[in-house]
Image 1 (cartoon, rainbow, N blue to C red):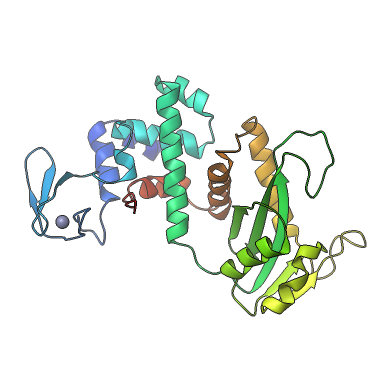
Image 2: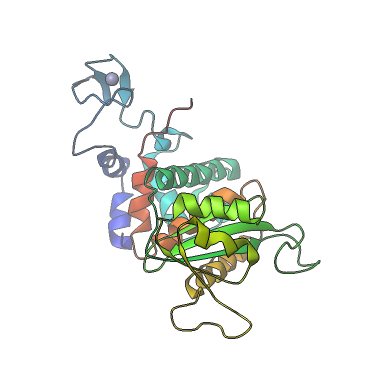
Length: 283
Ligand SMILES: [Zn+2]
């Protein structure tokens, strides 16, 4: 969304609400957040009642955007600042809100992104790059695989497609292959480096080709440059945030995955849409 359209949108609470409210529709219809029924009675003050389950709700009931008591204009401003990768501290300053309020809202955005990614997940296939990388921790100690205090992350990249990243407890063959098998279609060509944990890939139904970094960076199609590009892109962004705690790192990593996979899309529009999704019920 360009700035002109954005300023118009946030010029009144009514406009902002209309924009977000539209994102709550399914096939242009409003529906009950409990039973999905489309037959609703319109009540006063923007409320609705479901004709099937009698649930009374308002436009944003049960949705991510209903959390945190922000106005629609505030949400849209927050989404814009999130799109621009502004830090929580600066967001709070610019919006005149408490740090805690903004922090919670940004976490809500991240949760909405992760949930959407899980719902839309599909198998990757064709030509795949597989590699692990280490994030965070102190610079001291030995570097590279198994470096102390660092968090290992497995990356799976479909060439000309999406990247998928997951924090892993370790980099043993059992852990890495289990995740790869879950995510990559059988029969795909998988490129990795010479790390021994990947040795059994050919027994999992893949054509496995290895890159030897020591001999040459890449030979023909046998390279993992796509993932290496993602790793350096992601790490550059993390530096900007002056480190992320280990507890929040998985959520932050998924945000980076989302940004990377949608780098040619309108992030503002997507985040607004995800925030209008229903929050899944806990079992
Ligand atoms: Zn209902």
